[in-house]
Length: 289
Image (cartoon, rainbow, N blue to C red; front, side):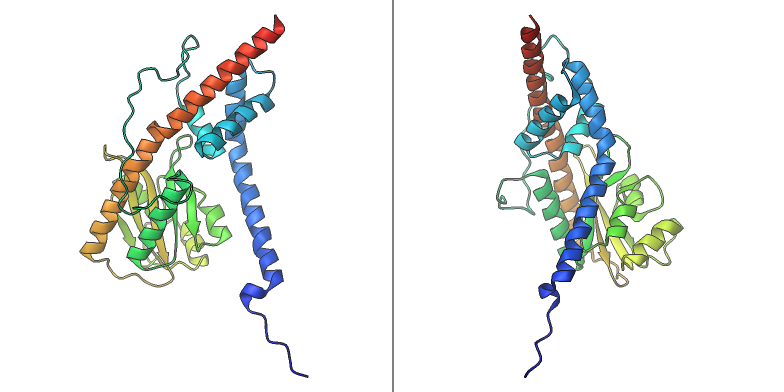
């Protein structure tokens, strides 16, 4: 009787179950972090449009989120940070000027479903990792509510890393320095570089990262609207000038697109939400007469 062949990692059901449970826990933590902001947005909508309860406000947000392919947290953040519309007007932004979608050289073909924010950020991350020559990293965007940077896309990083760096402030990390200086930052050796606070250094090293390179995503105004960072499990050599130029161009293209998305797609979503709210408000008043 011959012994059964050992199972590979891809065929291990216990490992698959552990990975599934970890993903569920990570998703739950993300929902818990987003809940206060979404609840705040629900309260604003309920008050603004005289909705009978917060569930009705949540339904309006969910419908808008699905129609415009925008995360609930992103929609809530832009809702609570945008001045309220004039209650007398049908349009939230009656004098808004629309601009065409910027071209993306790193994304010549549209992915299935079109150029969603998630698809673009994923393409930015993949291209950055290819240029730097590593396989783990993350993309962050500027947090409209809390300031600093918040992780939106990632690959190859541990759950502990993602929890620790879910939101970073203006000091203590390479990405914070890159955002502050609006310039690329290379950390050749995490263990020795003074840019990190000690807790941040420990969290990065524990994730298996020994070096990193951060590239700001910049709008046409020069403002930093996001960050893409590549992590390596070994010391990084100094990047060549051609690599830095490629990453600069990538950061500028992606930053312009993110700025366009915010002033076009996200504002379209708010306009739609405003129309739904006015409709629900009118229906409620009609029902009471």
